[in-house]
Length: 479
Image 1: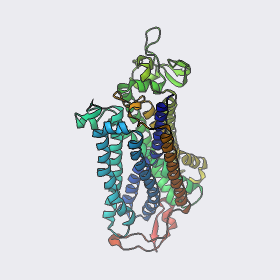
Image 2: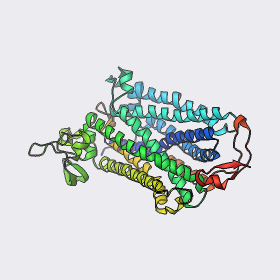
Image 3: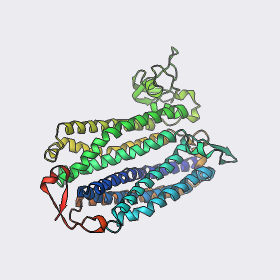
Image 4: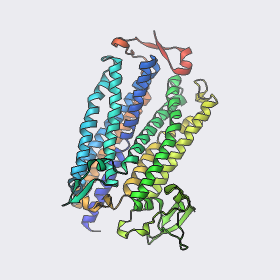
């Protein structure tokens, strides 16, 4: 390996580290902002202070996560220029402008309303505060729109031509609404909602398991897990659509994800068995061993029994993506999706049997423990899904048009290592700080004593729990 190759490898490893840490924050920001809006809307509509208490509590966790996302996001954009200078220059006419749109139309938009959402309680009307919360949620989703659009364009570049080393825009509509984006964007948004549902359910289960504010958090838990019954299969369906898009537009990437090497068997029939587990052989032209289910790959990618799915050996060797990481990362993501759906069905079964009432919910200790574990599983799914997406695109930084090695900045090995160490320490510091404050907020619990803003910005006074009403709703009434 030459010094140039080593520097390029370190730069790629560095950016992989940066994006892997950053991507754990925006999805929770997107989903939790939407859930805060729904909780506040229910409070405004019903005058039920239980929704207010939940909204204020999870708002604190939202702020911690939002701050970590901003810190790591700014770092990631800085890393584009440092680690991928040639790519940033070549893709600037589209990629740079899209990131600029995200800053102007989403980040600054969100920043304008988040202050009202956090500090406007009791200072502005309920309707205006609800409007501010809605705009924070909307701006978070709009930010995801632009970021996913930029990344999707790297997967399926449309509406551009590479001329004199620069990607010139020929059709903005095609560039923005590129094929990958049409499924990748909703897939990421639903993943954000799924993560947030599991996060809220896990935190609520922890309180219920510990016997703290059971009535209040039973409500958040129940709404989260029952919504998951709809969201989990929706995510699976969107994932299937995205997979077929990859099969059509990035066939080499799909072949790597599935560990699929040979298109046809010796008999001339399509070889479309799906590998449950496998390992590539030493030559890299097949599997050394595999556990395979016949025809399933065809069913997944072509929705037919004997459809043709191109194998890796149909492509030049220098265009083969790595196989092991995307192969197993994809299966980990799918496994998490299936497990979350099973947890949602378990919750539905308990609800139908009346075992999620305030009086009985704490007795389902294994279910509550499963929910706590499920709070971490979506992070694993997002990580492995992102690794699958990015590694299977190799050796291209812009699929089919620009190789990654041509987009990496030319720097010495010492400089590359310096940036790697610096970014690693920064990301770990942010990650540690985020978890410290998450734990601090959760240990402290919700504020059940502060005045609740009333219509006209008047305080309702201190609150005490009404035992009869709290049985099912966690309702608290004014003294």
